[in-house]
Image (cartoon, rainbow, N blue to C red; front, side, top):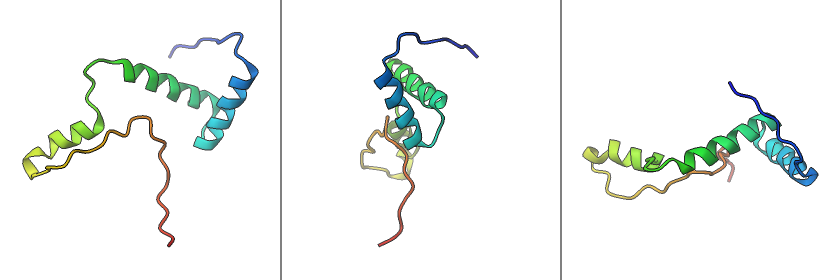
Amino acid sequence: MAQFTVRNLEEEVKVGLKQRAARHGCSLEEEVRRILRTAVLDEIPNREGLGSRIATHFAQEGLTEDLPELRGQVVRPTNFEP
């Protein structure tokens, strides 16, 4: 795995990254990895999204509705309380 150092990062950016990592329940390093991974994967041309892959997979089963792409969405636990 590669490592690199980011110099001259503004303090408010660092604080924001730490807060974002805390909201997502991960370390600062993991949050930065997720952000970088998403940024790179979003740039890959012709990359089929999850909704499109699911639609293709179930096309023979009678799936007729479009499935929305959820790229970049934060995963949150389901609340079953009324």
